[in-house]
Image (cartoon, rainbow, N blue to C red):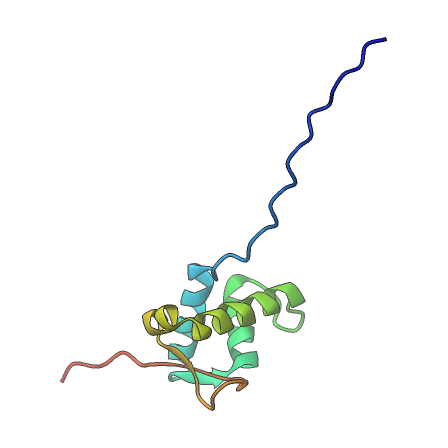
Length: 106
């Protein structure tokens, strides 16, 4: 009888949460600029969903969660927050999202 030893595979590393998609962040930024620099997050999500091709009356929960997570991760990271210009109009926990408007040349 021949016994074959099976090689044990290393346990797959748990997937790490990737930084928010730059493409999604850019859509959030464009939406906020379109709305004058600030908007309620539900309006941002609806506009980004529409631009992405989703029916705004039936936005998938995972897409909505991805938009929220992208914005929140960026706001909590000082370097990324500065790079994208995002901030919470009324502080932590606020659903009023804002972006610093580009300075206009005078």
